[in-house]
Figure 1 (cartoon, rainbow over the protein chains, first blue to last red):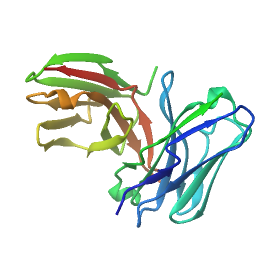
Figure 2: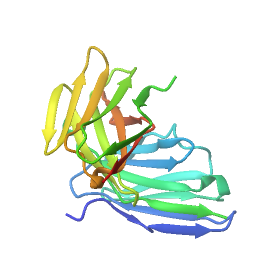
Figure 3: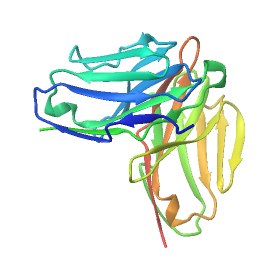
Length: 114
Length: 110
């Protein structure tokens, strides 16, 4: 298995544009997490899914952010419209069911909004 | 007050030194994770533990549930150990959420 795969690795966009980040889970994992990392706030959990269902989205900063999991192996995080303060590295991670939890992280997407 | 606190925030060591990074938490947890983030940005999970001690190569992680404290030790440190080390606590129930510490930036000089 190639691990958790994120795309793109780098994204530069203009303020106001829509940005979509993608994540492919490890086969067999059923939990999916989106994290954001900034210098000021470190790593923060944005949202997580169990079995394709969003369980907790309390970390999503505002309505401009949305996440979907259309199937068991894929997820998207969308920002519309993007703002410069959204610039960060966005990680997704997947895991097995809770009794054998371990975190497998993707390489991250570095987003720059200018 | 942060729910997960790490110390020190920055650490510089000479090659070969024994290194300790500490993590204290205030929430009830199901497991504690130690993660390593290299300058390139990728995050690797080093350990997941809920009691006792685990060892992998030159890395040792311990946890004291009663004291809500964990330590990560690196023996015979090497410049390639230079990275940010992040403590994260998971709390279970129906969830696998992680709360992260702010990380410890380790620089091992040759």
